[in-house]
Each structure stands twice: as C-alpha cells, then as structure tokens.
Length: 83
Image (cartoon, rainbow, N blue to C red; front, side, top):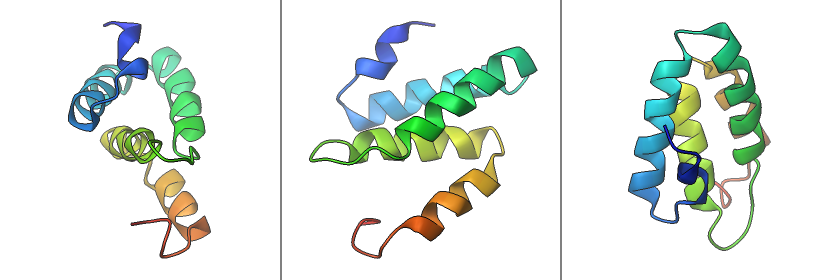
C-alpha cells in the first residue's frame, strides 16, 4: 500500500485507502499499534479542509474496532464541530 493516501485530498478516496489499511493492520498487532497512533493524531485535526482527515480517521478506527477511541473523541466535541 502506498503512503500517498495520507496526502489524498478527496474524502472518499482517502477514507477508502485508510479503511483498506486498517483492514490489513487489524490482523497484525505490529501494524495495528502505529496505525492507531497515526489515526489518533488525524482525528484531532482542525481547519478548513481537515474534516476529510477526521472522517477518514473515524472510519479507520471503526474498521479496527477501536470504538472507545471514537467515543472518547466524540465526547470532546461540541455539536458544531461534529457537523
């Protein structure tokens, strides 16, 4: 898999790439841990175009069954920032 997915600006392509990486990584603890760390950083992204990064991170974490991380991050959000 290419590292280029992290530079992708189209949300559907980025999300599909992240979910694919997560499907593979969920089978291997040595791949999963660094990816979870990366997605935890991505899920905290803020800015004009960063909603794409956040959505992809949520999708990836859900794919790997990391529900607690998603709930933790959603609990920190205001209703406006979840738009």
